[in-house]
Image (cartoon, rainbow, N blue to C red; front, side):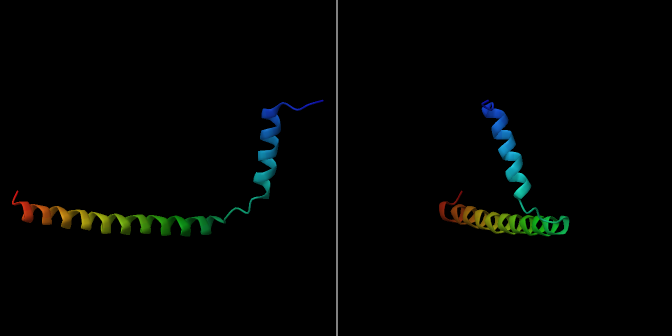
Length: 63
């Protein structure tokens, strides 16, 4: 008897997910904090460059 492809896919997906080594709650929290700090730092740096270049263009073009 052949399996329905969708049922087979869901079974295989469930089997693969049971093999995953999930992080602990503390690891997930620490990694989330690192990501948020990295995003905030990158945003500040990119925002600063944007502001500086905008001010340079204002000075150069005399707008």
